[in-house]
Image 1 (cartoon, rainbow, N blue to C red):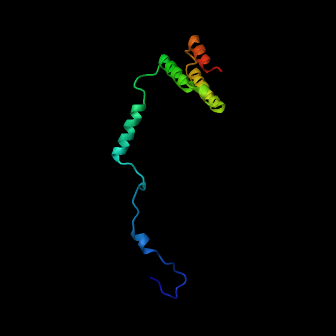
Image 2 (tube, rainbow, N blue to C red):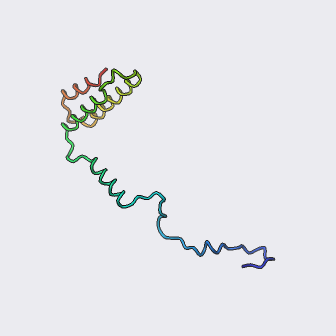
Length: 117
């Protein structure tokens, strides 16, 4: 406490100094419980491939995805058909880049024929 005539001394906030700050990172308002974190971890583990990727598996997966994207594309409006066609071509380009060193010519031509307009 200071004298009322004292103009040079600054008042200290005593309640702020009395409350000691905790160490470490402050808790989040939307933090996850242990069970929620475990549930998310198990869901991520289920999405991971169970076996090693190989050329045949990647080629079959690419072919399936391209066919899924192009299924019923003729019935869609032209702008949507073009967008889906670009997505399918993107799948082909990803496969082409990933398997560049070990491609079979027949696989490449078959996948390219699927995405060609």
